[in-house]
Length: 439
Image (cartoon, rainbow, N blue to C red):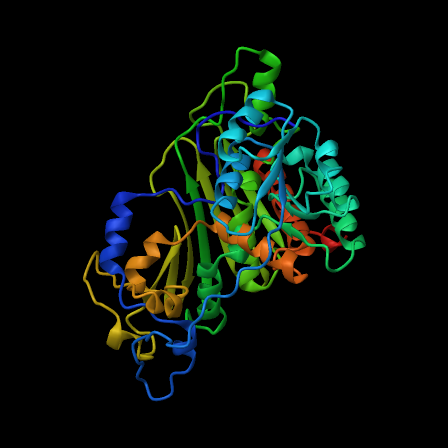
């Protein structure tokens, strides 16, 4: 496997921090309101959230010995996040690049090291594996891991092609129900997104109009190496035969999030791609837009550029009564002036900034209050979506339960971004065929 060995952060899930936006949102953030409270409104009033005196943390399950396959930027971040969990010891690591193995030893000094993933899979002490190799290498590793009886967490997107993704999905279907296969669609495991989903599904936004998602970060995606062969391997994201480009490697999470929220698959996508800044031999554009069309006329506009960091990463759902903005692990609802008065306004802090007012939507408010903290303040200190995803993976392994991001969600999201990338590369429109989504 070929793993990036640059310190440049290419984590496609962590939101880019922006001090200006953070300051604005801190001012806009009102009293946190839970979806359960909003749904129970009967008389137009809403009590402020209170700590549950009977709240107890869920007991930690037994240790799940984990092996990591692929030790690039994402793989090293996985090791870091797993060390924060009390029951996810990293017992083995694998990469065919010796320098990557040496670096991994700093975070996981007790882990056995392998340069061949098959040898790691032969290790009976490894109960589960996390696969973070480049996307085009996923198929062989994932299928071998499943056939070896391991629980598998596979980074998203599932594969570089629909054919490879379908092969992985079939392999996942064939294993016992208690053998966990989870795809790294991190938002599906993130408490903040589950919290927002409750508001979205209960119609708090009114008539859904449109949605935007963006990822802007000024970086070249290129890494240097004195070895030309190694340099090509490191820069797999830049070439069409190994990468799904910005819309696939980065956009898979927000695009999947939209399909999840809408409980629908897109019917068409129109793509645009240009290389605006980094003029080199790359084949994947550094600036893209993809317009996904959903049943009923709803559209998602995904835009991303490696030429500018302005705006960072965020997702917005626009409705006739309210708009929801998700940024980092925080979310806010901005109500329209003519929207129904549901009682939230009584307790939401009102600050006039750019003529907008925001109500903070804070996940785990009961837990935060029980810990003696203020939800609106604690929200900025919540863990990363990756940690939540890995934590849920370990939980599913211990309980033998299926994950929210199983083979079907993983396959459907991969089909969506594979075709979106084709549209971007060809500056064209693609109509999705139902048969593409069938395993």
